[in-house]
Image 1 (cartoon, rainbow, N blue to C red):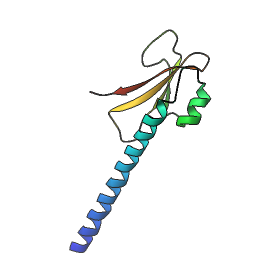
Image 2: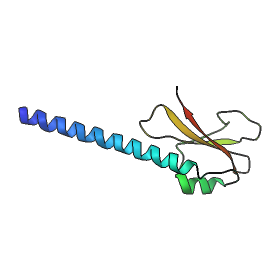
Image 3: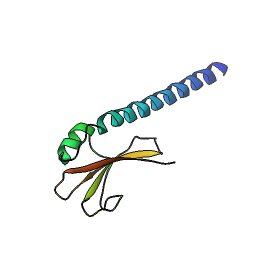
Length: 102
């Protein structure tokens, strides 16, 4: 019985470590890549660099006349923040923003 508990605990620790590593690696990927996104890029160029967004939000989070939609990128299991890439009506980048809960 003690051996079974030890194996179970080891599996839980390993699984938790892998999930944490994945969250950290994905968050770092967005932090490194989002700075490469600049005004004027197309929607497809953003997707090529960052991958498919988790969500495409219309209207934008921050309502502005020039913003048609936000591409939302979020790290799984990271409940405190996400990134948005704002696009105009022609599908070109206006700006990016990192939203984070206080």
